[in-house]
Amino acid sequence: MQNPPTLALLIPCYNEEEMIEQSLATLSAKMRSLIASHKIAKDSFLCFIDDGSTDNTWEKLCALLSTKDSVSANLTPNNQNLHKQNLQNLAESSHKSTLDSPHNIAMHAKSAPPH
Image (cartoon, rainbow, N blue to C red; front, side, top):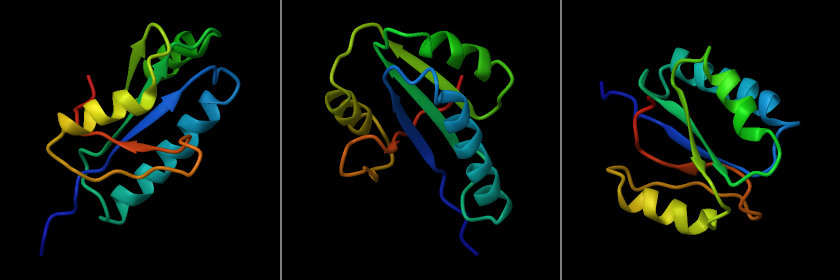
């Protein structure tokens, strides 16, 4: 039997202060479900990328993440074009899969361990 793949989701955030808590809860629950059903590996994780938000997205993320395992966050001080950042993350990744919505608001694959 083959080991399940590790799933790493890069979630772009820009002024998401009002939705970040719900997004984290929903995605964390889905990850736990996928891990429990052995569809993804236990070392799978979420990585939120704040791309220069001008609201309190970063502060809220930091507060929420202080109690979460398998979740990390990165801050891009100024909006630096998430597409460019995602291409760089993918280039540095050992996994070469990506999932994107038509509006570039869904999740992007990234392979980097949480801190």
